[in-house]
Length: 220
Image 1 (cartoon, one colour):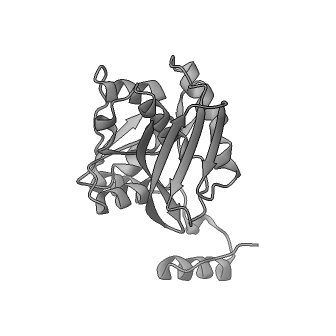
Image 2 (cartoon, one colour):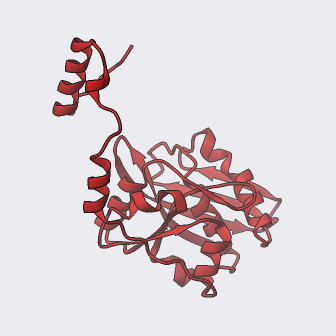
């Protein structure tokens, strides 16, 4: 059976949509990932298998093929663990296919099924909204960051079992919102600043110029 789960990845500072296609067919047990996956993505099969099993579900003993589209862009990071797991569970009928179609998902899985944070959740939430999607699963630790994006339901989850329960209709995940004005006000207060640095006038000036102009800076 074939299943598709939408996800996202970051290239530079911008995110783009990734279609995680999972096909399960009869044959000798195998797990193949295609679509230019780098090492961390290839290793997801071990994390996904253990996470599904330790969450109380059966991992299929069949031929599993995972395609990450678009196939011409190199895929990096561990954020595809969650969508791959959801794709496998959808292909095996545990998750109804019609419920997963409206979501994007991202997150690294630990062996016991916990969802670990990933980098770039804000960019991914922005890309999801720009693509017209209304809901996104993110790791719990990335919730506040992704919730800065308005007009999209950010659903933070701690475990794979939480996401499965939500999609199957027997548990709830509450959308998270962020008070942007309050967040910026808190971030504007710092315990230390340049006034506490003695000397180093040239270094401080270089840092100020780089910050004001959004320039890159290498500190040696």
